[in-house]
Length: 262
Length: 355
Ligand SMILES: Nc1ncnc2c1ncn2[C@@H]1O[C@H](COP(=O)(O)OP(=O)(O)OP(=O)(O)O)[C@@H](O)[C@H]1O
Ligand SMILES: [Mg+2]
Image (cartoon, rainbow over all chains, first blue to last red; front, side, top):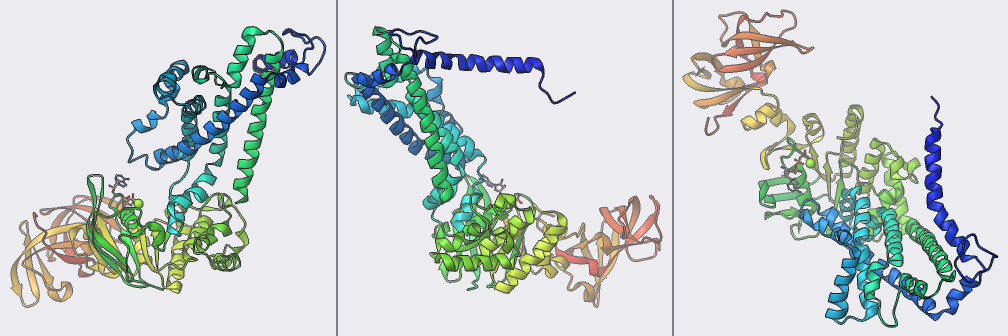
């Protein structure tokens, strides 16, 4: 026996990679094509479809809206989700079991149903402005992920550490920021990235909540492909991918560094 | 700096279950008191009440002149040492130790100086810049000790601080803790379920059972003169037999149980009431084959080897007893003997209600 992996294992792994990478290669290739229609392999190389994105005002506006919604929604979900996850773990014994389940329920509801329900209650029912409704919708959409991920990293946190800090004279709220948060940093980064990507790529909930004048990027892509078959959608997809990766990198850096500096 | 602690008639509940009942305990300034008892008897609960993480349902707690009962835990100024160390994983050893000074607004240079000084005292100055994760269990507990001591708290509390360490280190560390505590004269409450540990480092020991205080005394008193059968069993008086006095002749008392008679001297045992319990350690029942001796008739059962003695399971008219016999003359199962109580390893207890 050697510790070389079995040939079949290598082949399967390679196939999985190909399966995962091929769509990306095709999208990037199509985005770079010089033709006026979507094609692969690209014929001629050009960046004109990337510049085209910014010439279409609907794309410019929806990119901004999508980023705003994703940032604000993720931020709000963290603001609500971190204390919720903290309370669920800190008072696990005292709190009823179903309370934790409550935060997972939105994942179980089909997003289409969730979006429709929000439309009925927020936009139609309460007359909430479109942007605010979108923000609320996305916050609720990503909240379960935030609570789950933060809970997972709090599960291994020893709360007697918190009590040690309090006994040394640190007020409870301050202790939460100086002792608890730094120790769930990894969970916060993961939760941020997961929530941000989920929000940025969401179609089902946004489909119902967008309205006249305000839309998100994925919805705009849908609207675009209904009318045009040019490589713009491919280049927008590539742009979306880069945005996501950039945000991940920035979050990793800033959250990582500011907490390490303390 | 050193202050007395007064726990006055404190009760505590978790939900509707009562876990502490009417507990009163006074710890003098500079004294080290251990709370000793089986798992679940309420030792940690008592510490959490004093630290303020739990609110008593009745009663009050005072430290020095202050009433702690209404004070939030971060204003109580109590040093805590936990079983699992509870060091801050994201801070260096030095920052762990200076944490409490930082909360008290001590300037950085002074903070560093005092924290380093304390690390020196626990022998960890060279490891000041390490992360807690890179320390051994004993080193972690020293850091925890330094972190609690450096704020010079009027009260120091330990919750089974040594139970995650190996046996040898446990003994070394308890001496170290005692020396530091003595040197600083800090009033201390120490929780353990290890009797030897409690007796060896404490000025006084509080023995608890099911949320109640059973006896609070110096170790020597607990060991020789337990106040009740619970404490007696706890400190090794395994044989407890009820007796009735049938005759008094000057200071010698003749007492009877299940038709068996023994004679006890009040000069050796102290005053003996008309009904009492005789409690004896296995070493306190001398096994003799001289059947004319004034003792309890018994039939020997299983013999086990203890190293320093043989231990016999004995059947008597008053029930099952355990006695230790000499190594020189091992006796066979079935032998008829007399068990003679020895006053040094026996004591007289008052009869308890319902017996
Ligand atoms: N959070 C809680 N909710 C309900 N009951 C609890 C809680 N914490 C402790 N108890 C109960 O209170 C009683 C006393 O617990 P405590 O932790 O004070 O025991 P202990 O003497 O410290 O035991 P050990 O030696 O095992 O640490 C136990 O019966 C325990 O089951
Ligand atoms: Mg305990």
